[in-house]
Length: 263
Length: 271
Image 1 (spheres, each protein chain N blue to C red):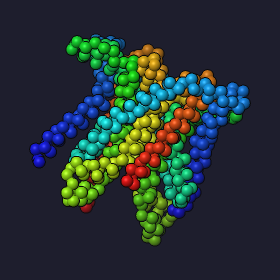
Image 2 (image 1 turned 180 degrees about the vertical axis):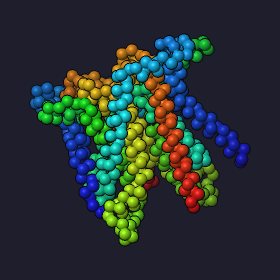
Image 3 (image 1 turned 90 degrees about the vertical axis):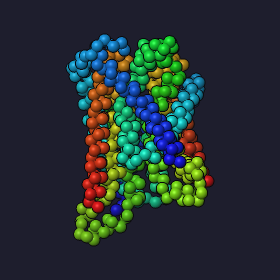
Image 4 (image 1 turned 60 degrees about the horizontal axis):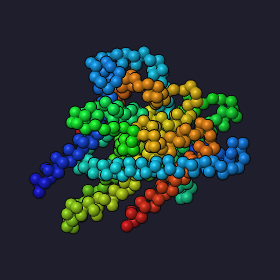
């Protein structure tokens, strides 16, 4: 049981299918079409700065809304009876098992002109377009990724030792103080991984904005998809920038998380 | 005191109910329209014709088969590779271990689309070198790639919590090495292995982005088929498909849940 050998196949696998592809992205990003060193792909990539900013903005808002919805939800679930907790978590998971595209398509059906929401609100005399704007994209993102925020926070919260809470109560804390001094600090790791699990995919996904957004809601993922088939160099440069950005974000989150844990 | 508890209990139930409505309303609407005679969102009467057409659609049936085969194979191989890896990685110490674990997490933390295009670069390069085209095999490899890290992540904490002396104890009690490994170690790690397997299976079923970049010209899975269907023209066949998939998911989840409850009951009866 003390052997390192079982991990060797996976280490080889990682080198071939994780490391080398990333190195290839790096190399492609710094070469032109003829294979010579060039910074042209990055010059082309800067053309999409606006799209990049918009993607980050949409991802940020979606993550914030997910956190606002998920945190109280996770807390409330931990307060329920154990068997009910399992059922509620299962109910959260079931929509995740549905296909990603079908879930987005469901919102297209709901929000489209003459769709159920439009019809319902028309009866009340409200006429508007609900699809083809940034709000619809954010809604779609929240729908896609909400369970990814709930699950880590719930997992961390449900592991909090009941004795700690009792100790705090015995020492004279009211329920607000218990939450502030015990539950909240201990739930931070869950929040951090929740933010990561929502922000990363929503910043980089594609199709959600194609289905639900307007023409100016195109996101960086859609650009990579569009460009990569014709111009691999610029596509690689954009992918590289996206990846570096995500890694910096993750390092910051980790740093933030650790500091919170110490304090 | 009790009164406020009751009040907040009701409020929390309302909140959870609202979230559930948010999660299930879109699916309910999808399923509702699968029974619509007409093609648009205007109700034209009850009909099962979209289900009939769905089963006659060879493309969709073929794609469904591919999706399931890929998910089964990818989660199976990923579980073996990942469990072995977790056991091995656990025996590394210090910086090396941190390095390997971080490397293993790359597919989880890097955006799907970047992983997709990077694998596409690799496969096109290898394809030119060894003269093959992207298809079933490249999709399978790619799916294993993003599944293994989840297995490692699920198994690792179990290994750390495991009492390392139990392996020796099993040997002392007369197990041979293989028996000790299988009966003790794997048994101890089973919950982690199982959730890793389940997560891999789910992610593989659900994946669109990575399949999209590594599938080559011909390979179709369900996500790709749905993608091209929603792009061509919207057909209520998609709704019928959603309804059936939802039913399948529901049945699987209920079975898993019932089994867990049954096991808990058996356990509590024993003690």
